[in-house]
Image 1 (spheres, helix red, strand yellow):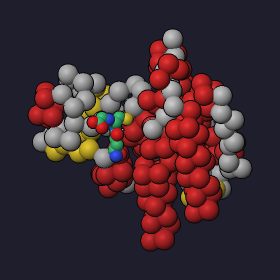
Image 2: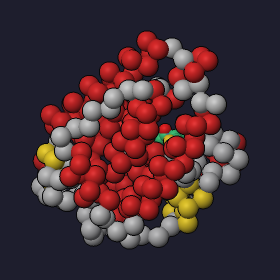
Image 3: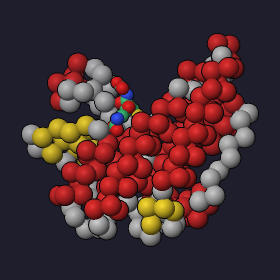
Image 4: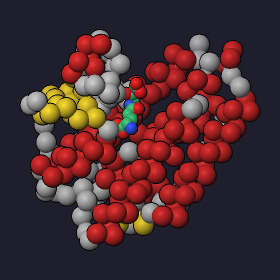
Length: 214
Ligand SMILES: N[C@@H](CCC(=O)N[C@@H](CS)C(=O)NCC(=O)O)C(=O)O
């Protein structure tokens, strides 16, 4: 299997953590010609990363990729428990993808100081804080977001929270970590292979932020 991914892509890291959790090795490649390129779209019509290519089957959308992996490699499960447990994990993951991460992504264009809109920065950080408050209400941290096992719900947050911390430094915003953060972060980093993936990601994020703030 091939995973098209890039070092700075938070959704690529989300898929890579799921693969690492399952101990599934794949060929990690950068999209030929870059994402959205014609060459890449010939392989992956949506043109986004991550994309999993398994023979003649090409799949985008990190949640769909992770659920496919979970069915192909059921153990350890990323959707354990009963119907409600699985539904909650899916809900938290979708809230991450549709509310938490987009409010941070909206800040990327505000990084260059020369063109920064400070009102927009405040608005996006407030939206981010509100989205995390929503996660506080619906998750069941113990220490993972939906209980004692790492699940689909946890996969997107490591990259997003690294980005949030680093963007907070760049914008001078005091990022208030959720009460569950420390225990969750320790538990996530103790999963085999995760810590080096997260450290590599953080280095790429720091370099990218510096390049946007000359
Ligand atoms: N909902 C998608 C989001 C993926 C996404 O936005 N990936 C970014 C890189 S992190 C990308 O491919 N951007 C290029 C584009 O949107 O065309 C997922 O869960 O995989």
